[in-house]
Amino acid sequence: MPRQVILTRREVFSSSHRLFSDSLSLEENKKVYGKCINSHGHNYTLEVSVKGEVNPDIGMFMNITELKEVIKTEVMDKLDHKNLEEDVPELKGIVTTTENLSIFIWDQLYKHLKNFLYEVRILETENNFVVYRGE
Ligand SMILES: Nc1nc2c(c(=O)[nH]1)N=C([C@H](O)[C@H](O)COP(=O)(O)OP(=O)(O)OP(=O)(O)O)CN2
Ligand SMILES: [Zn+2]
Image (cartoon, rainbow, N blue to C red; front, side, top):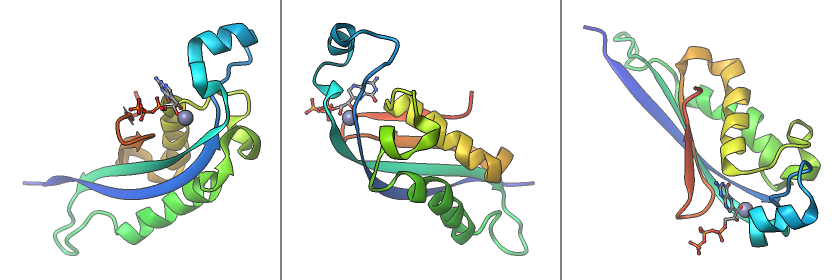
């Protein structure tokens, strides 16, 4: 019987951002986002999960080294020690909530991992996190 497993890699990246929507007035932004309209930073914890069938000959379906490399080029190099609004062209005009970041990261990784990609989970703080499964 084929065995499906979920493999997860965790990374931490540091970015600065602020929550501000160009569609809203300054007053409306203050009302919606409160203190978060001011620039501040987070140490984000990212967990990327892939799902697949274990190849019995090699005991895995994907080498973690390969997963690590994709996360490095598609996420860490783009977001770590960056200002999300200023330094990441793909995020221009997008409110950098954890929800939107999880979707952005999914889209970057999906180009390489396709249907193996199962879940992107980001913790913005110890207490706040978002899970996205591509739906
Ligand atoms: N739905 C969302 N709401 C909020 C998001 C988000 O991404 N999605 N993000 C923020 C801010 O970026 C903010 O930095 C969160 O900070 P804060 O509220 O201070 O964080 P904590 O919850 O960890 O702080 P506590 O000390 O636990 O209150 C806001 N909202
Ligand atoms: Zn924040």
